[in-house]
Length: 343
Ligand SMILES: *[C@@H]1O[C@H](CO)[C@@H](O)[C@H](O)[C@H]1NC(C)=O
Ligand SMILES: *[C@@H]1O[C@H](CO)[C@@H](O)[C@H](O)[C@H]1NC(C)=O
Image (cartoon, rainbow, N blue to C red; front, top):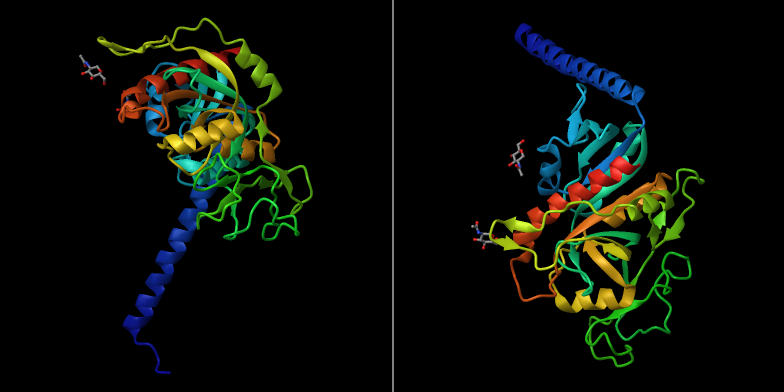
């Protein structure tokens, strides 16, 4: 190999210096971040407030409800953590972004870095329960992820074993959707889409043995948090979109049995009806069950407050979500604030 010329040596040296400098910088930044996080945690514990999107977070951050600390915000893993107080209770607020993966990652990051005593999740949702109205604020007792499926082989039915069922990977205990006519048992081999079977999630509790899984479908919210939620009454909620357009039924806070989430924006009457009938659900969204499962994994109290902004495909109004989202988000913030006040 030819010897390097003086110029080449210079280039190599300066490249080394640049890389080394950025490494040093990165280490310094990391150290600073660790110190900042330690300072925040020294004031803990905090209630973690996990919010899906900016239109749900803005009414909180733009109001005087939240008072930030001087350490706020801290940016980590592509998320921004707002540290401060709501009604003199210490909180850390974070926005997840859309859907299950983002909600899971963000909740785990919050729990990994910060001293968190419990998680309050709030946002807007679709409504599948005809006894409720747009604008109502639901607090379910249980959440499930309804997007983990075992899709059965064509011509197989309820009596046939599922793939990998023998290993314990999959189960028929929760039930199936038969594509075609879901009201009829899937006896007839009438549809190539056949059946899908809802599956419980594999959960690896932090208190358990690593790699030893538990299976969970319905995740209960925290009992103490639910008691606090039941005490939320007589709070003033917003019932008008603007001066000339109000909800027909004044919004109310309701404890409901169940809610579900998956990576699906549901705007479909048939699937809405199916889920309601099968699981007795009220709100449907794209994050709550993920936050519930991560909280369960980490053995941290959890509750979700979801304001109904649309009928998930169950009405003829195509624009209801865009009309009522802001009102629903504002009311979700009001109920969440009231909940925090009562912790
Ligand atoms: C809240 O403030 C942000 C900027 O901080 C702004 O972009 C947004 O429009 C505001 N939202 C509302 C609802 O006022
Ligand atoms: C009030 O909101 C409704 C629904 O979004 C809209 O159709 C109407 O134009 C609004 N009225 C005013 C005065 O802004």
